[in-house]
Length: 175
Image (cartoon, rainbow, N blue to C red):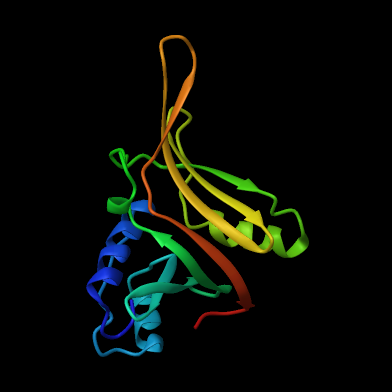
């Protein structure tokens, strides 16, 4: 997170940690980004996600694939946290199935590749789904769990958080 994160950004980063299996949340403290990248490389981390905020609202996400890149930059809007979603279900820790909708352009496929490599391969019986849906260059992030009813119908329950990502840069290499 940013250098002196607000309580809302701290809470949001905890929720994001639950989304990504095997993730660790670290406080950046007084370290600059290059030092954080070096520490992650030393720990053999595969990815680094940095969240930024303006006046207490999460408004940016940087995804850096380690050790060689690429790095994707997103602005973030319409952030709704788990506790703001009514009847929010419990969050499963299973590896999620991923759905990518309308990321068909060359650039869309590139962002899809960057995002899908943040997640391990799920087991076929996983009941957790994460959707990245593109509409007018905004990628909507939604997080659900599902269960199959006795009559064969499937019931989706949103478990949050939810937000919109607007990609604005892909950089070869790391930060």
